[in-house]
Each structure stands twice: as C-alpha cells, then as structure tokens.
Amino acid sequence: QVQLVEAGGGLVQAGGSLRLSCAASGRTFGGNAQGWFRQAPGKEREFVLAISGDGRNTVAADFVKGRFTISGDNAKNTMYLQMKSLQLEDTAVYYCAGRSYVNIATESRHYDYWGQGTQVTVSS
Image (tube, rainbow, N blue to C red; front, side):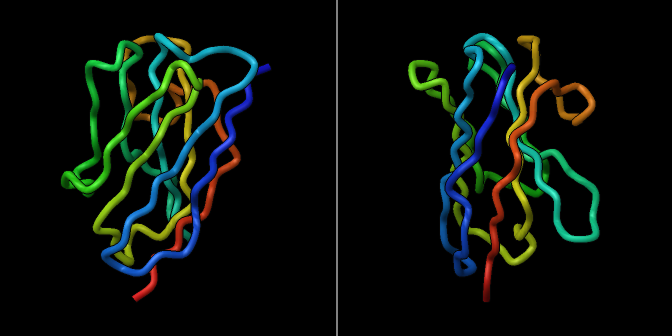
C-alpha cells in the first residue's frame, strides 16, 4: 500500500515563501511521474506542477508564472514544492500525487496515489 504524506503547509504573508514536502512510503517513486494539485474553498481541485519520472521534464499551470518549482530526492523518496512570491489566491489545500507511469499528467484522474493534503494560507 502506497502512502503519501505532505508537510510544510502553514500561514504565510503575501510575498512570502513556503516549501512543501511529500514523503512516499510503501514503494519508491523513482522513475514515476509525480505532481502537485491544490483545492481552494468552494473550487475544484486544480493542477499546479508535475515532474516526469526521469526528472527531465516539468509542466506548470499558468498561474505558477515561475513562482513555484518542483523537485524530487529519490534517495529520500520525497518530492518538494518550493513556492515563493505567494499571493492571497494561492490559499488552498495542497495535495501531492503519484502516477504509476513515467510520463507527466496534468489531470487528477491520471494519478493513482494521493496524500491527505496540507493547508497553505496566505494572509495580507
């Protein structure tokens, strides 16, 4: 059974930074694509960033605009989401997700494993 556990969420002022982590247990995700999604209150879950299984390719949602980066540490079986220049609109629960394939996917239905989510709140 695969488990993904996010950490690093919290309250941050607009313009600030946070780094989220996603630790995987039960299997290694080296070689499989991973991604981050978020869900704001009253809104549908949306794609944020994804990285291919070989780490060579990333895809970002338009709203990221170079503010967020995704990375992975295969030795630690952990993925990261570094966020900077946070805006009020970035307030949401952030979820990490893993696929059983190498290729990137931007739709949540293509992901097989999900974390429980971590709250990110950006204040003015």
